[in-house]
Length: 340
Image (cartoon, helix red, strand yellow):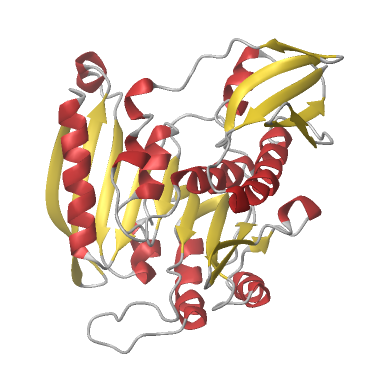
């Protein structure tokens, strides 16, 4: 059976070609999670971009999984030159706008973040399971976390900037109240490595009955250095980690210390990030390749015990974001049995 998926048309013409390459990678990974290896063809029908592939007939729940692709806006079965629309239930309407509404300088594109998340999850054996946990250890104001909530996950964020975390928490509180989502917010401090780590912990459910019976999800916002991720997640490791490094020359100063290079940041952070993930979990990391070379990222991942994904479908993903930013992204997995 031949399927054809229409892609969202990005307003920036220079970014459309990048979206096509990223979308092929994402769809390839999502199909592989269904044990499908298919040749994906990009084609233009009218003025719209489509990804077309041939495979066995897909079950409704498999189509629903693929409907979560970050850029797919229309799904059809293709017979010759004719497209026959597929009826697929849309995602939960309440959280659809959650990653998009909060605007701020330096915000990572939510569609790109969703692509990273979908691809990383597809590299794990946990894809399509319920109650997954996403960790963003450089979460800023939470775009990645909100993408995780939209995907039905629990989300854990960690960042040094308390103001950014407060803005994310205030925004999420307003969002929950606006949509009348039953929730509680617990603000407390946890002791990690003999130091206090402030946390805002949201627990919520889409109905009062679900909340009463404990069918809840959560968002946790921790204020602290990214190297604390392993200790914070020791009891409940994450299934997937998605992080977007700052695009400047240096990482922000920490606790009065001098700024550090991105290589120094990753060399101390990656071991903690691996500790924060379950065996067979996956990582997605984006960065400015003008300030941090992709080859160096692969080396650091291997040194920390990750297995970088280097197959052809995951190469050639670098793309221009602005004049001084060529964004690249890499994916890696945690071995099934980690060595102590």
